[in-house]
Length: 80
Image (cartoon, rainbow, N blue to C red; front, side, top):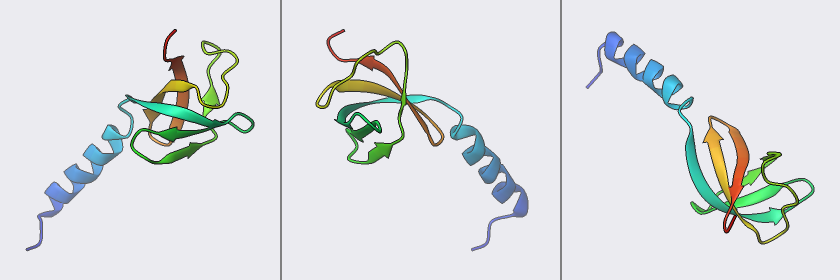
């Protein structure tokens, strides 16, 4: 069954806006240079931007990652 064109257009716009809504997920630092983390969902995120709020992360640190679209930012570390 084919969807009406206005429904398909609305669906595309919703997908585009959902990608702009931030979400957070926990991850473990896998590599420091370049920064790479393994997300709790099992995916590997490369080129994670180190936020100045989280200085000197090391391999094995548990960090909080903000996800907006394709961008990943480390925003916190477990335990302070």
